[in-house]
Each structure stands twice: as structure tokens, then as C-alpha cells.
Figure 1 (tube, rainbow, N blue to C red):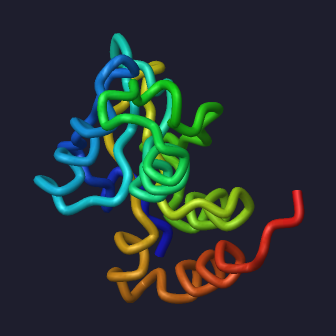
Figure 2 (cartoon, rainbow, N blue to C red; figure 1 turned 45 degrees about the horizontal axis):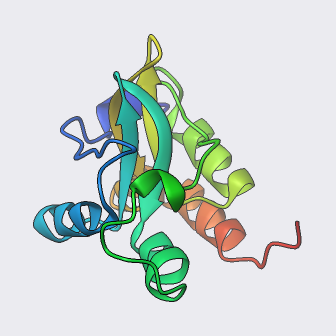
Length: 141
């Protein structure tokens, strides 16, 4: 069983623009019950902002809620493609210690896969377990 990411990805993805405020990003996270939102400009993924980014790079640093997302987002985002296998996506997530993988086609965001999407599909229990164990290991980069 070697399904593609397209079969499990979330297609309706909440996004923010780089110049939107971290408060707006946090409100979207709350509204959509997610912990990360891709930062998109002209359809292209420019970064990711997570609830952790907001807590550690904004609130803990004393920055205002009006701070632009671009100042605290993670740049150089690892992405996947709709036609990659779910196992391949899990390996990419493990290698890069990420829990969410934006899916891009023709340089435009078309979906997102979370580790939870892989974990909730019994066929991929082993891939999800392996990815989570590697994501949870401390990074010494």
C-alpha cells in the first residue's frame, strides 16, 4: 500500500501573508484549531508560523501583537509534492524534525500534511511512529 500524499492532505489550508500581524496569525490558529499556518505570498510558500514561534519569538521577546509574521516566521520551509508517497513524506518530516509538511504543486501551495494525518491512517502507523520518534529526538544542529 503506497498511497500518495494527495490522498491524505488537507486541501483547505488557512494561510497568512508575511505582512499580517502575529495576532492575526494567532486568531486564525484559534479559529481553525491548528498550531501552524503557512505564510504565503502570491501563492508561494514563504515561511511557516507556529504557535511556538508566537510564544517564543514574539511574546517571550516582548514584541507587540502587531509584529509582522515575517519577523518571527520560520523561513526556508521544507515542502512536499502531492504525488510523493505517504512513507516518503513521513521520512522527510522525520529527517527535518517537522510535524507539518506544506504540499506544493507548480510552485503554489495546494495542501498540507500533518504528522497526525499520517498517524490516523492505520496503514501508515509504522511510518508515523518512526517519524515521531525522530522528530522528538533533540536536535544538535
